[in-house]
Amino acid sequence: MQKNILITGASGFIGSFLVEDAIARGYRVFAGIRSSSNRVWLTDPGIHFVELDLDNRHQLELVLQQTAAQFGKFDYIVHAAGLTKTLDPFAFTKVNFGGTQNLVEALQHTSLIPEKFVFVSSLASYGPGKEDRSPIDAAGPQRPVTAYGKSKLLAEQFLYHQRDFPFVVINPTTVYGPRDKDFLYVLQTIQRGMELYIGTRRQLLSFVHVQDLVSAIWLAMESPVVQQNLLVSDLANYTAAEMNYIIRKLLSRKTIPLVVPAWIAFMAAMLSESAGRFRGRTPLLNRERMKEFSAINWSVDAKAIAALGYQPKYGLEDGLQGTIEWYRENQWL
Image (tube, rainbow, N blue to C red; front, side, top):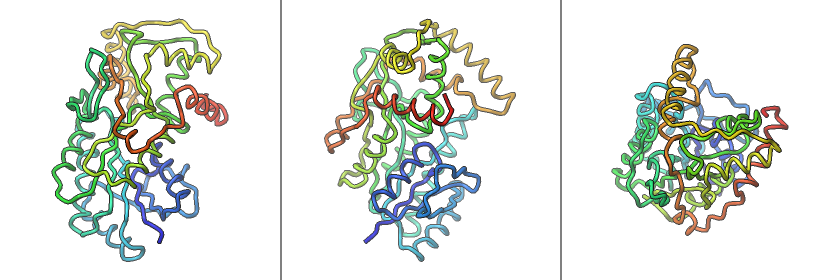
């Protein structure tokens, strides 16, 4: 019997890949979107669109009940909707914590709790690792340094307080791949001949290709694991210098390396943020994000997801090669 799956944030970078893969796996797929969402990546005729207002619990309950009456309840829910960029720190809490709370309580109130609820959080809910360069571990303390990370942690803590609610939390590190616009800025900088570092070339980083993240999410969803955080990466860690070397090689570019002191980078972030406020946009470079960009250690220990049989297909070089090809084919780079 075909299983029903709801994917919130379906029009986003990660969500759109989840939708495609869920269809390929034979699920009846419900794409949770806003009325204003861009559906450019959601073209399969088999998609059932569901407009969700995560700020409105009553509306969520009505949608859940109406969908269940027609198709049956959702067997699985992957909650990938969230706010990643804003200059209003309170908006992170409203969307990332409040939206999760409303959805879970709507499921509980309507007695439509799924077999598994997968919350797509972030490594930001843990915050950077120790300066002794030991990797971030799922069992370690969570000390987020940004409003975004704190809002994700609040949502995780809320889930852990729910009785008899079968959830699992996915904490991906930096996600990249086709359709992503954030990592594109790094590639564009190097293509222009500039290789930037904040404070040091030895910053530890970790990455995961979007298709490997999607595979990890299915693995967690279909496993018996519940009430657990699973950190996801490509199972390797890199220095900033190693990352830039890979990009230089793939782009065939020579660069001028520039190590920018952290205080200068924060000044630049303040200027960028001011310009963003004037234009009504949230720039990639802002003071909140600088707290993450300047942290020395984002290395990850992903042994828990690996123990479930997770085997990523993409190392950073292979993954970036395909991503760069996609950017070029679509005239993004």
